[in-house]
Length: 295
Image 1: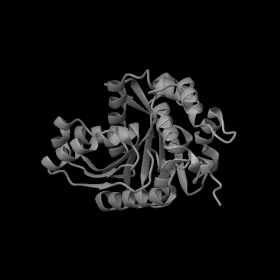
Image 2 (image 1 turned 180 degrees about the vertical axis):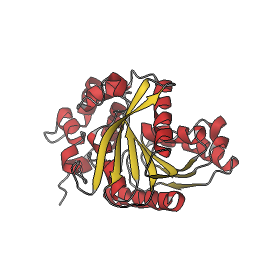
Image 3 (image 1 turned 90 degrees about the vertical axis):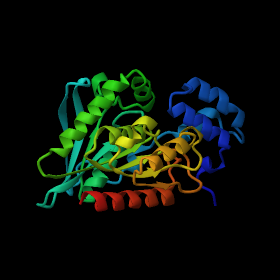
Image 4 (image 1 turned 180 degrees about the horizontal axis):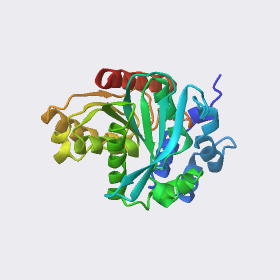
């Protein structure tokens, strides 16, 4: 019995939703264009509601979980916005220096889902740092639409500089082993690809469905990459052949993982785009890479 009504959505709805979450169309345009797919009493507004994140239901590690210790830190970023703010999470147990992972969010700032992902890494023995690109604008506002709108006003060059400052802060952190990896989702996947071109000490990176690094900078990459793509992701996948060619030409170590039947955002378990089997496969591959390269 099919209990998730989104399984019956026309592929056109998913394409419109991808355009909506990436700011290509606004809410009004989504509702207008999705109405053509509304059948059986399902309205465009209902479809949007079913596709929207449900943070509380998907949370895997509570902020007050005794197995982790989380705090917010501010980081000097003179080449960026002056100050960056990030969520720092450590394993509560263990007396050995821990490997380090920078967690880069999607195009909506540091929302509860990405905080949860950072805690998941801490449970696996990593020290995780998740910066908030929206900090200069007051931080994540608690509303995805407002967050998306704010994100589009950011100075991207300064935002990238903030993340680079955060990565350097993390690599030098007391209690860490100095071995740094990066993982990012959507916008954050592209950010991690870029970071690999700027930071030769980045040992490993797992960009999830993010834009590839500028091809003229790929030769600077020293990290081993796990490139995670979705099967149904026209916008990002169009960039992959050129990025792959550049990686091969530069002899960058990389693996590409593209689970079948997946949508952009399939690792995000707060929305119906989540694919449990594919997300588990990608998570296991990410942990395997980081344990091999960082521990």
